[in-house]
Image (cartoon, rainbow, N blue to C red; front, side, top):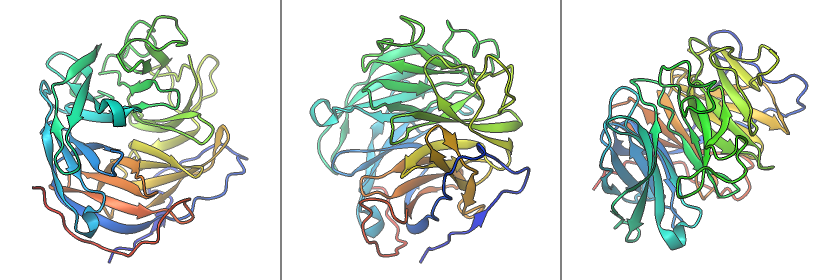
Length: 367
């Protein structure tokens, strides 16, 4: 039985959010399950309408499926390998996003590192639960710079129906401040890969700039976009994203209050405590998986302000790559570099629609 809910404030300099936010501290999540499905470097999770989880593996370029009931004896398996992926360093098969119209178009979007760049492809999933088949991919967007590090990779459809894309600077420090460059940005695209109508710089995919390496995207209950981002050796960030906003990299990090740049809403002074990756928002709380920090961070949100972060499970489950809200109201966390990796399932006390659960810890093998 797993029920660890240890809370820590971190081992280095204290992370902080905005002062006077009025946000109550987040309720402690409780581990309610673990799925040992033999995953290798999983990166992103999306949920199909039938509850099936689809998970990307960075280095193998495989898409895996896991029955949402896998932790209580369900099944898991392989959908297929995404062609054209060239893994290396932090690159490979990265973020996934499900079409808002999946029930009719069956489209899944994938961000991946290719031979010369990072790109986005649209793939069709045919079949049904337990028998999904991967269709031929159609590349819709290319030219995002690649490197051994700072490849970005998180993609997600927003409430407006457009695809938001977090990119990294790919070690090219001139790109984040250049509106004509794709590195160090959040992009906003149509489902066909064109610049979305209403973007802040005209017929340009750039939505916000001055980013170092965006790793998480999520919207709060009022439709505001938040993003998690790696700092260099200091100042990991949680940012509130506005159209046309400049978040400072490489000129500034964190929240220095310099004119012309937007401050982060939460700053982790020590990247050893965080290196925030996947991001999810539920019931007014932002949940961030920490890689170097090996913990789950919870940040209470109140409008456009953020309270002080609280961390859970420090050092208990290794590096946390992604955090996703499942259809049943639970959080799914993806471990990273555990050889093999696993899914950790958390109950969020008081979450609307959260079912009563039995504590379990079972194993599901890939078939």
